[in-house]
Length: 120
Image 1 (cartoon, rainbow, N blue to C red):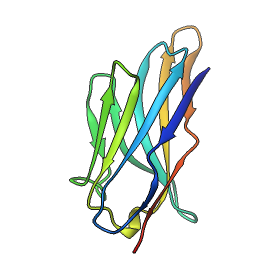
Image 2: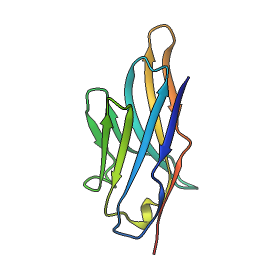
Image 3: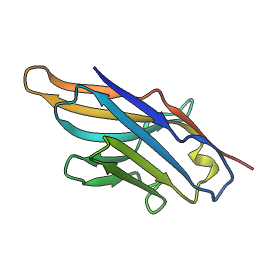
Image 4: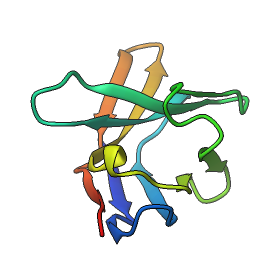
């Protein structure tokens, strides 16, 4: 089993910065993509950012220019650097790992979630 451990959430003022971390451990055969999601109560889950095995990144329009996703290949850790935070960024952020194994198929793993609150 793959286990994801998240950290870095907290309370920041508007315009502040925060860095989320997602550390993966366990039996990982092939990582296809790592993603950060967020979900505000009453709204649909939103894909915030993603990074592929070969380093290709993608961002939601709402966070482009403010959020940066990066991957530490050696440490199996993915980061989400958030700057210029806005109150609308307030929600729970989840790390999602998508893997492939030929004898099993696709694997989907979620972190426990970390709360980000942007408020005065």
